[in-house]
Length: 397
Image 1 (cartoon, helix red, strand yellow):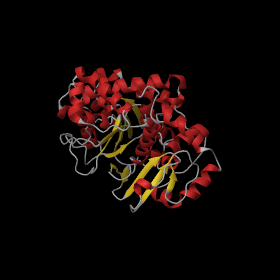
Image 2 (cartoon, rainbow, N blue to C red; image 1 turned 180 degrees about the vertical axis):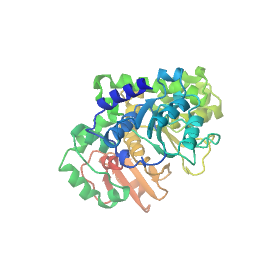
Image 3 (cartoon, helix red, strand yellow; image 1 turned 60 degrees about the vertical axis):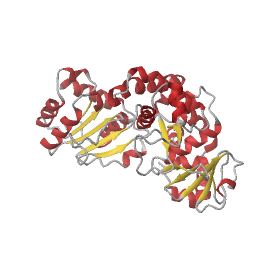
Image 4 (cartoon, rainbow, N blue to C red; image 1 turned 90 degrees about the vertical axis):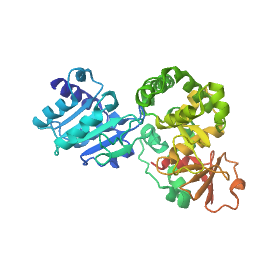
């Protein structure tokens, strides 16, 4: 176990504290069992290490370990937990749990057997945390970690401390909020850079390689995580890549399942299941007219890429500006709110708010007469009445 502590201390020494994610303050770190899920490279590891460095003793009571460490080829998680607790350990942070075959049962056993031990674990968004057999559902406090919001991106790149605003704040007071932000920086100037390469925190590491690393991340999800965690046949992976390309190049993508299944030679039910898997992997976002009570075999009404960085990548740098605006809007609101497809306007939010998304010339014509309707307009620094700057919706988390 000394090897694990040595690696842990090297990681702690190297982790920066200049910027921390907003979700840091939302997590109930004092809970006995905390689950942080999220797609690859959104910053789960950094988040845990920053919390340890800022809040916990480094005297042997805390330990971070990744379960893809070769150490586990000859050791068990249960054995590690037992030795750690007997040595005075109280805070255990487990990364990449999906790389360890019996992770759920062993974490459950550790939770039951060591009541004074606090465990935080991270894993892929595809993990079936609500596993009845391991019964983690009533034990773990669960969180879903997203990529950087536009607000977080601005704080990180410009060394600012811009606050979060609620949707209610923005709808009722967007004029004052926009004025306060525009006095500090030019939000429109930074927005296109965020759309292209600002969602995943690794854009800071060799920015010239961002596109290549993003492509590698997508391939790892498709070629490794989906086959392992969703039993997708490896022979179908090229078809999933083809499907993502079709979604990226359609404005917007409204799936005709029969035609699409014929085009890429996958049967209807399998195709709909794959659309669900892609959303679980945070590669796409499926919209429904009524999102409540949907089943895995229900066809989505619209499909978007999960974020604008994926849109730019998969559209081969020719991403449609209207599609980018809508993708940004859905991505930023979906963290806190239910976004649905609607026949009138572009989106319905929380069941009672209707939004039309467009450029600075966009009017309220499409939502005229609808109660609680708004226009989210790109290309404007300030809004007026029901017309609100699109960039402001990037301040929701």
